[in-house]
Amino acid sequence: MTEEMPNPRGDAPRALIYAIAVGGLTRAAACIISLMISVCFINGSSASITSVSRLLFAMARDRGIIFHDFFAHITPHLNVPLRPILLCYIFNVCFGLLYVGPRVAFSAYVASLVILLNLSYAAPTIIVLIRGRQLLNAARSTKDFHLSQSLRIVVNYVSVLFLTVTSIKTADYVCVVLGIFAVIVSLFWLKCRSTFLGPNLDMIANHGRNAGSLQVEKVTTTRPNLETLENRT
Image (cartoon, rainbow, N blue to C red; front, side):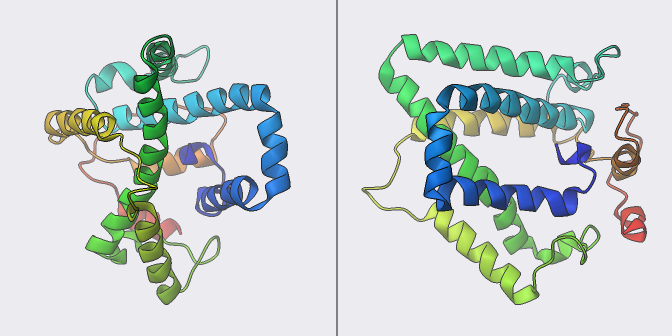
């Protein structure tokens, strides 16, 4: 959803930090939110489907998933990616049926969501630690959300260790669920590694200036035009 934000470089990391502060550091706010369970479910479902459908649409637009031509489609009269939204809805309904089946399967699925969320945060950090921060030089900005070089390295290592190191008592044994998702991701990689082009940064930059209309353009480049984006920033 950062592609639809007017200032994603500054607002996106702030939103992640504020969510942790409200849910994990302020006990009063966490209790109030917990009491409003019905409202949280409605808002959480809407936000989840909205963000995941946009992620699925972006991957389809960049030819990173199977049936990318089908899912990289904007419904004209609604101006939203309706097909990815319907896929997310069907997926949630199917997995919600686990609740009427074995409780063990449902508990494992719910527990795996926390682990998968942590992995989604740890994976890009690990890539940066292995490949080096020069990968981010072209898209780096010093005016929105900036950390010093030493502090960035410390934060990256601490975050990875915090998300991966566990103990016997705190471990969550959902390896079966994670294994299934690993197989699915591997199949996607084998199928789409030759077609995936990466995001068209020129199109995203133009869309950021014209956030009122979402248009899909045909990707013609073989890799992101990082040099153009660096000149803009």
